[in-house]
Length: 304
Image 1 (cartoon, rainbow, N blue to C red):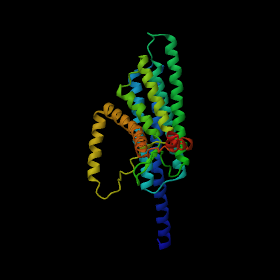
Image 2: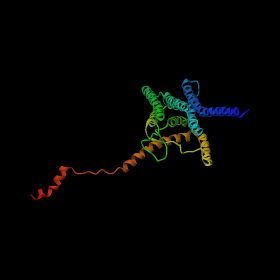
Image 3: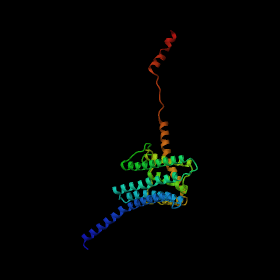
Image 4: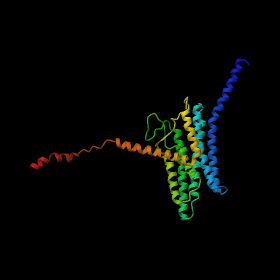
């Protein structure tokens, strides 16, 4: 083989390898879509009466929770391998809309409002189901709006800026909001809500999650974690311990992590508002001209 043919073969091999590197992040995105599709099918199976309702709902929640690391890995792998593309970005957004928008809103509706007890007023049960359907729809709208804003915004800044040099999410990310709903279902092992007062609390959680996604408050992005360091042994050890704890006590740990992340954004916004009020200079009041003139003429009026 002459040098020219060898160079052509090497170029073809490199191009083939390059196409495979572009395919790798998309495989994680496809896994994300598969998890969302599986969650939807399990939620529909729960209301069909053909299976174990708590088990099916718990599996639907677990599928959404598994999709969260898949969603974070596809973007990191694309950046690490320098294989980002417009096709990958659009595919990732569509996957997030399915897995973290449609699937959790359907799961929240079925788990929180479909199996309400009929021991109280049937009209109240119907009203709660209608309100639940509306709030779950608002969650879906908030999620896709959050995705659209993320796609068109470049270097967006939160309303309550954090430390200089750190990157934050503007609004609660849709995987975190979906993770909050899924972790709540998993915390209760998929046993559906039957009490009306629990349904009201669930209504507030779903509505708050939808609001936080469209808000302009800052949320921790986690982009400070660097896996490309030369000796990340300490980080790998910590991640291994966390992974074991999450698997062993998944229902408690994931629910606590989801709540902490949600309230961290609320606390950051409240703390920023308090600090601004403390730094605000006190208002100085000046007397009106008429009142000042009367006060300056007071000695003359007294002598007269």
